[in-house]
Length: 224
Length: 224
Image (cartoon, rainbow over all chains, first blue to last red; front, side, top):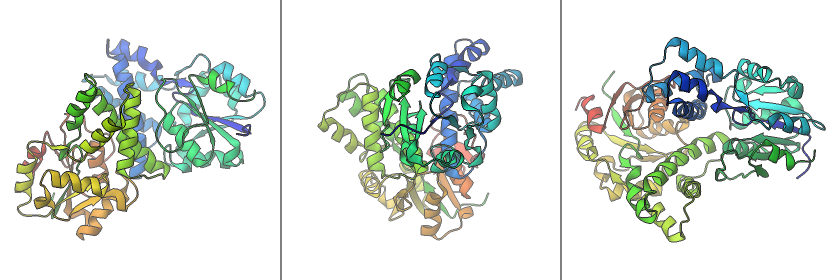
C-alpha cells in the first residue's frame, strides 16, 4: 500500500463519541441513559440506510430527531420538549475520544486531513469548532448532504475525490464503523478501521487494509 | 382506502419465524441460542442494506451465511462446519407463526396472494413448500434476486406491479418489518404492518395504512 496523499476521517464514532450523550440522557431518565443512547444510535443508522434505499433522503438533523423520538417511545420514556431539545443540542457538543487530538497532530504533519460525514454541515461545523479541530481540517469538512444520500453509497465517497482532486487510490479513509470502512474500500480508497468495540470484521467483501483498537493505533500503521 | 386487488406478503418475520432457529442454535451452543439468533438476524438485515447501498449485491444465501459467521465470531462461538451447515439449512425449514394459515385462507378467498421477499428463489421455494403454502401463492413467490438489490429499494417493489400487472395503488402489502411497510407505502402500495414486537411506528415519512399485533389482526382490517 502506498503512503496516502490525504487522510479522510469519519466523524461520529471515529473522532466524536456519540455515547457522550449518555450522561445527559441518564440525568433526564435515571438508569436509562445507556439504553437510550444505544437505541438512538442504532435507529439513527438504520434510518440513514433505509431512507437512502427508499430514495427519501432527509438531512441528518431530521433523521437524528426522528431516531430519538423512536428510541424514547421504545423505552417508554416521556420526554418534554425541553429535554428533547437538550438531547439534540448535545449532538453538537459531543466529546472527542481521548487519543484523537494527538493522532491528528501526528498524521497531519505531512498530508492534508479531511472529514467525510453523514452529518448535516451545520452539525459538523458546530462539533468541529466545539472541539477546536478546525486547525487540522480547515475547510475540508465534507458532508453527504451535497450528494443527497447517506453512506455507504459510492456517490458519498466521490465527494472526496472531487473536492480534493485526488484519485481514490491515493486517499486513505479512517472509520470506526466497519461497514463505512468497507464502503470506502469498495469505492477504491485505502481503508483503516478503528475497531473500538473489538468487533469481528464485517463480511461485506472489502476488508480494510489495516485495523487497530483506537486512532493512535491506526496512526501507528501509517508513515508519520 | 380501496379494497386491494391483490395482497403481497413479506416472508421472513411475517409468515415465517426467523427465530425458530433458536432451539437448534441453543442445542449447538447451550445458553447462547437466543443471542445467536438475534445477532444473526440483525447483521443479516444490516448487510442487505449496506450491500445494496454499496452496489455490491450478493444473494440472500450468501448474505445470511456471512451474517452467521459474523454472529458466531461476535459471541466467540466456535462452530464446526457441520453445525454451520445445520444452521443454514434451518433457514429452509423455518416454522410458520401460528395464525398465518388461517389468515391466508380467509384473505385468499377473493383476491390473489403473493410473496415478495429478500430471499433467494431457492430458499423461498424450500420454505414455502416445507410449510405447504403453495396452495395460497402458486407461482406468485417473487424474490428481489431478479432486481439485484434488497428492500426497501423501489426497484424491488416494482417487481410486483410488473408481475401482477396491477397499479401500485391497487396492491396491499403486508410486512412485520416496519421499514419494509414504509418502503412499500413510499412506493405507492397500501401498507399493513404486522407489529409482532409491539414496537413504535418507524419514523420514515410513510406510516402504514393499518397495523395489528399479528396477521389475524391485519386480516380483520380488510374485507374478507
